[in-house]
Image 1 (cartoon, helix red, strand yellow):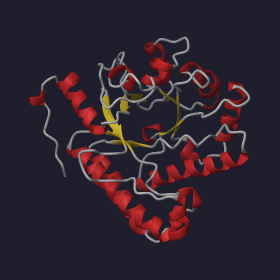
Image 2 (cartoon, rainbow, N blue to C red):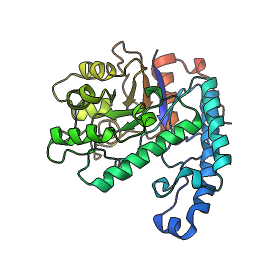
Image 3 (cartoon, rainbow, N blue to C red):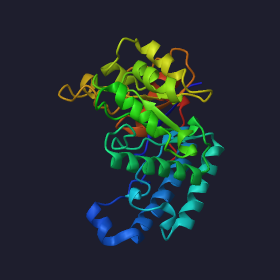
Image 4 (tube, rainbow, N blue to C red):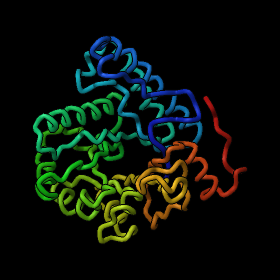
Length: 310
């Protein structure tokens, strides 16, 4: 079975998990204000997970902005930590009701293969904090609760960069290692599925998230089918998760970059017989998933329930 979902923002509601602030505000207002925003973000996450359950969406990427500037403090230092923890626990219980899969995709600045020791230290802390949040939600220590990142650089060459990545992987908490997955890139200067398989997976067994659009931009020597099947073979018994989006340049705005994500999905996704979950990285978020479901899966609007807005 293939399940489709979306990332972070829900356009059908007013629920938000992205309340944040500039660094100057953080320095001025401090951890008390951070705690207020984190509490509201946690409630927003619970509301979105409930919305997903009500509307049949079983794959969802949580926002890494739940805790603003979290690299600057420990989560347990927040004045509202106990209340936030209770809400996040409820998020997990709610997700389990409909077998909803939750994951993270931390920002590009998280680079375990960096040559800068400070970047590595910050990356380890931030990735461990993502895993800590997942523990508060009550998610399993498995790739079903993936923390998805890119290698991020090829400084000194791809072999040396991935060696640094694999070495620094050992610095992560066990729960983070059990969730960390890596994604193929859209640029030839970075990593194809085959390169991730050869240089990282074979060394530390980290699964590969296959991104369809990134492969289109940077296929290497593999076809889409072969790359997808190689990537999904790495998931060590857990159901693979992939990313899909259409190119904005090819379908909506010819002046855009090829790798820019379109609002909606314009072609039928080829699963090649693989059972997987798909995070649709479309700008129209859940609306794109619902439209795709009507266009390609039910093929009949009458078969698809109306949105439940609360």
